[in-house]
Image (tube, rainbow, N blue to C red; front, side):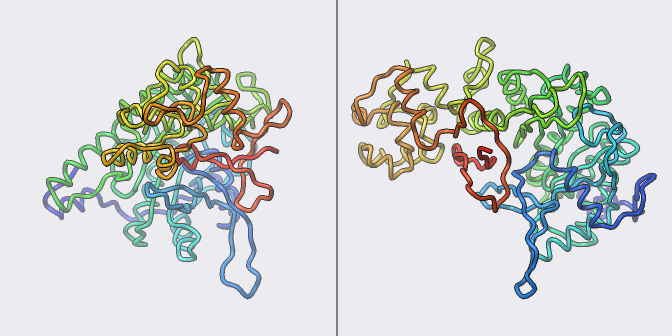
Length: 468
């Protein structure tokens, strides 16, 4: 991967000048027409929390806001990062039954040239609209040709336009491994979509795609990241390979897998491929097909939200999928977050004495997050903690009080009974809003009125929701 000889290294990564890659059979469109088509087509490819707004300039103040293509993600330090999120092309040779851009659908088609993507990225960046680029694509001609076009974009951005902002691209399953390898040296993150949780679901809804072809580039990226880190230690000038790691996406609800099956797949991906993130995309019913759910009956975003909360528990709270769910109890409780639900199923482990419990045990208490558990372990070295101390530390006492004691006493007299605690938890002001017996959710833009923001579980900024 890395050569001590700088000349050899540059030759290995160098590619000749590129053509425009206009695409086949495309009518001439303006860049803004392409942007409108390809930013809208990218909204089903989840990699960040999307939101946007159209706000025209007023003629006297500086700047305006264009909704097309702008989305928001969050950095590890909590910063909100705006990304230009687009497809290189919505042309596709595949006919996946769940996809809006499948070849059998009659939708407007467009393809950017690599230089058009670069110019858009640079112009948006100079106007402070964005801090980076998220680029995916339909499959043009074949996977290798498509991956070559994506490589052209990132190569030009880094070497010709000298763009040092954040770049996240999709790795195309079935593409030549050499192209994926070269691309990895120019991007911050790569992701390969798993598409559907199981191989059976993939065979049913996306017969052109195969699990082996999807897992192969995942393994290649994982090995490249490991090798790249080793070479950076050995050679100071070694190029970074996908320094922000890799992620993947699963479509939820297009096939009948349970939450237990989905979380088991996610846990396997984290364990085997060392992924940074698994994204869960609630299926949107846009195509009529006998193998798909009926139109206008897409998966509720509440289920997606619960999966994200459970995913947080896998990554940061030392839970395993088989602890949260079982084959006999295969789906999450929609009324309670997975951590509270787990605690209610294991009341024999509570209450926990705050001044003696180890860090691992504290993490399992509802209302105690990673940071507050760390603060508890540090603060109690100097003395016993009281309930008022826990509130200052950041513990959410309105949930935690049913599961903890301080100096052997509970905050209030509490029955350690599942029904009693459940009723009290559901009575909290931040419970999920209900409208009679039906719940409908939609994703918000930044300037919607009468917003009710879903609680950000464990500091996670995943999605804004409200009742319609």
